[in-house]
Image 1 (cartoon, one colour):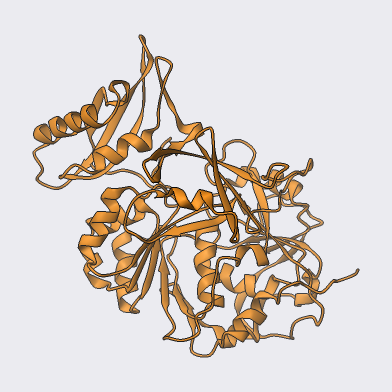
Image 2 (image 1 turned 180 degrees about the vertical axis):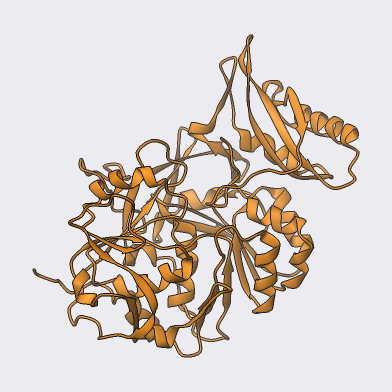
Length: 455
């Protein structure tokens, strides 16, 4: 089997280049020193066993997955990062679509008997890495898919295209509510590994308060989360434990309410909200404290990422995008001209584009469109509202009406708050977008990917 040299160094080599000494990954149960991780193995079989294989990486925790990635990149021809919430019943289709012939970690029930099974255990001194390296394909699941899971393939070069290595300054300590087996979390892990730094990983089922406590214990400096995660954190007294010097939001629309709340809570701390998607890759980051993004970004013809808006949908052209969908009929997310249609809808208001929601998430009210996120942005701005979720409720007249679930501040006068919310919606939105039903709830669920649960 030929093993062509990669265009870029393997992940482990790039970690070594940034000096791994003194850096670590920690999940509250175990700490792994990166320097040692580069010479150790946790595989119960020789690494050469996986040379050229298409590997399903399926671990209980994030730390094991991160360390396995250091070993497998450049060895396996393909790594499929299995998120913790993937249905066991979907695994046969995943293994077929990705031509899986090896499983690292926990083997799926009824997995193919011909697939090599490799378990992960305690660290031990490794036997070294192969001299030649493959261009490993990194495969991730797209968010929000229903039916047969949808997977896209990336290169390490594309995944790290937005990461710059600082020339000076102390190493950051990264923390993220994301799971590193999804695109947003993987971006944070790669920043910590390649740009120089350590990282605090969350655990499956860990509460926001418990994780914030651990972040404070280790002195987190750079903290990333979805807007929904940040709203949960802002409700927790445990947020007092952290004093980060940089905050980042991505994965959902960052509305002005959450940006202002973070600015008030951490005055003087730089806050960036980034746009990225599993298919399109990292697009841009906005650091001016305002929701949306400047129209000028769509007018640039140079730079690594080109943006345009077609029929209200944001499209990106970039070498950071996924190369293809992992399925039998092939194909990729980009069109013939190289642009990926993200399906994220925007509206121009003056010199700025504002995100209004997903094209496939529209509520149809008598033939008129309503983006739930647009209504939520208005509701979330009202004093006394912590979070909101807008969804459709069936109507015999219009087919659907807008319904709003609101998580209020403790002690808020709910009757007065409901009146204020409805007044604001009727003032700032078209009549068909104003909620016909308002409910106050005690909690709003967030998915494993950190997004507001809309099902």
